[in-house]
Amino acid sequence: MAYIDKKRTNNYVGERRRVRGIASKETCRHLRMPSTLNLSLTDELRAFIDANCGDGTLFATPSEFVRDLVRQRKAQLDAQVVRQGILDGYRDAIEGRVVEFRGDLKSVLKKAKK
Image (cartoon, rainbow, N blue to C red):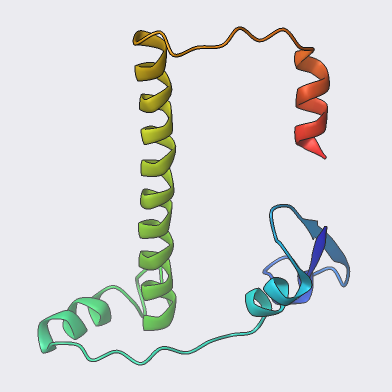
Protein backbone atom coordinates (compact mmCIF):
# COMPACT_ATOMS: atom_id res chain seq x y z
CA MET A 1 0.00 0.00 0.00
CA ALA A 2 1.40 3.37 -1.00
CA TYR A 3 1.07 6.57 0.98
CA ILE A 4 0.45 10.12 -0.06
CA ASP A 5 1.28 13.12 2.06
CA LYS A 6 -1.72 15.21 3.10
CA LYS A 7 0.52 18.27 3.01
CA ARG A 8 -0.28 18.59 -0.70
CA THR A 9 -4.03 18.26 -0.23
CA ASN A 10 -6.60 20.86 0.81
CA ASN A 11 -7.20 19.29 4.22
CA TYR A 12 -3.64 19.17 5.55
CA VAL A 13 -3.35 17.89 9.09
CA GLY A 14 0.32 16.95 9.06
CA GLU A 15 -0.17 13.22 8.65
CA ARG A 16 0.06 10.64 5.93
CA ARG A 17 -2.95 8.74 4.71
CA ARG A 18 -3.28 5.48 2.84
CA VAL A 19 -4.24 5.59 -0.81
CA ARG A 20 -5.82 2.55 -2.42
CA GLY A 21 -5.03 1.57 -5.95
CA ILE A 22 -1.66 3.27 -6.20
CA ALA A 23 1.01 0.89 -7.39
CA SER A 24 4.12 2.34 -5.81
CA LYS A 25 5.70 5.18 -3.87
CA GLU A 26 7.02 6.45 -7.20
CA THR A 27 3.44 6.90 -8.37
CA CYS A 28 2.67 8.85 -5.19
CA ARG A 29 5.64 11.09 -5.81
CA HIS A 30 4.15 12.04 -9.19
CA LEU A 31 0.80 12.85 -7.57
CA ARG A 32 2.39 15.20 -5.07
CA MET A 33 4.64 17.13 -7.42
CA PRO A 34 3.00 20.06 -9.15
CA SER A 35 3.36 20.04 -12.91
CA THR A 36 2.95 22.80 -15.45
CA LEU A 37 1.42 22.81 -18.89
CA ASN A 38 1.65 25.72 -21.30
CA LEU A 39 -1.27 26.15 -23.68
CA SER A 40 -1.76 28.20 -26.79
CA LEU A 41 -5.33 29.50 -26.93
CA THR A 42 -7.37 31.45 -29.40
CA ASP A 43 -8.54 34.87 -28.27
CA GLU A 44 -12.06 33.48 -27.98
CA LEU A 45 -10.99 30.65 -25.64
CA ARG A 46 -8.86 32.99 -23.54
CA ALA A 47 -11.82 35.37 -23.17
CA PHE A 48 -14.00 32.43 -22.10
CA ILE A 49 -11.48 31.40 -19.44
CA ASP A 50 -11.08 34.96 -18.21
CA ALA A 51 -14.86 35.36 -17.99
CA ASN A 52 -15.04 32.29 -15.72
CA CYS A 53 -12.36 33.23 -13.22
CA GLY A 54 -11.62 36.19 -11.02
CA ASP A 55 -13.91 38.34 -8.89
CA GLY A 56 -17.54 37.23 -8.79
CA THR A 57 -16.83 33.72 -10.14
CA LEU A 58 -16.19 30.30 -8.63
CA PHE A 59 -12.51 30.30 -9.59
CA ALA A 60 -9.83 32.69 -8.44
CA THR A 61 -7.37 31.91 -11.23
CA PRO A 62 -7.43 30.57 -14.78
CA SER A 63 -5.45 27.56 -13.53
CA GLU A 64 -8.19 26.63 -11.07
CA PHE A 65 -10.80 26.87 -13.83
CA VAL A 66 -8.83 24.73 -16.29
CA ARG A 67 -8.00 22.14 -13.60
CA ASP A 68 -11.71 21.88 -12.82
CA LEU A 69 -12.54 21.35 -16.50
CA VAL A 70 -9.92 18.61 -16.75
CA ARG A 71 -11.23 16.92 -13.59
CA GLN A 72 -14.79 17.03 -14.96
CA ARG A 73 -13.69 15.47 -18.26
CA LYS A 74 -11.75 12.75 -16.42
CA ALA A 75 -14.83 11.98 -14.30
CA GLN A 76 -16.94 11.74 -17.47
CA LEU A 77 -14.52 9.29 -19.06
CA ASP A 78 -14.30 7.21 -15.86
CA ALA A 79 -18.11 7.06 -15.66
CA GLN A 80 -18.26 6.04 -19.32
CA VAL A 81 -15.96 3.08 -18.60
CA VAL A 82 -18.14 2.01 -15.65
CA ARG A 83 -21.34 2.32 -17.72
CA GLN A 84 -19.80 0.23 -20.49
CA GLY A 85 -18.83 -2.45 -17.95
CA ILE A 86 -22.39 -2.55 -16.64
CA LEU A 87 -23.79 -2.84 -20.17
CA ASP A 88 -21.32 -5.61 -20.97
CA GLY A 89 -22.46 -7.45 -17.83
CA TYR A 90 -26.12 -7.13 -18.81
CA ARG A 91 -25.30 -8.31 -22.33
CA ASP A 92 -23.47 -11.34 -20.92
CA ALA A 93 -26.46 -12.17 -18.70
CA ILE A 94 -28.92 -11.82 -21.59
CA GLU A 95 -26.80 -14.05 -23.80
CA GLY A 96 -26.39 -16.66 -21.07
CA ARG A 97 -22.70 -16.10 -20.39
CA VAL A 98 -23.00 -16.45 -16.62
CA VAL A 99 -21.38 -18.58 -13.96
CA GLU A 100 -23.12 -19.46 -10.73
CA PHE A 101 -21.35 -18.01 -7.70
CA ARG A 102 -20.95 -20.58 -4.95
CA GLY A 103 -18.64 -18.73 -2.62
CA ASP A 104 -19.09 -16.61 0.46
CA LEU A 105 -20.00 -13.07 -0.59
CA LYS A 106 -19.04 -11.58 2.79
CA SER A 107 -15.48 -12.91 2.59
CA VAL A 108 -15.12 -11.71 -1.00
CA LEU A 109 -16.27 -8.21 -0.01
CA LYS A 110 -13.97 -8.24 3.02
CA LYS A 111 -10.98 -9.08 0.76
CA ALA A 112 -11.97 -6.32 -1.67
CA LYS A 113 -11.94 -3.73 1.11
CA LYS A 114 -8.33 -4.58 2.04
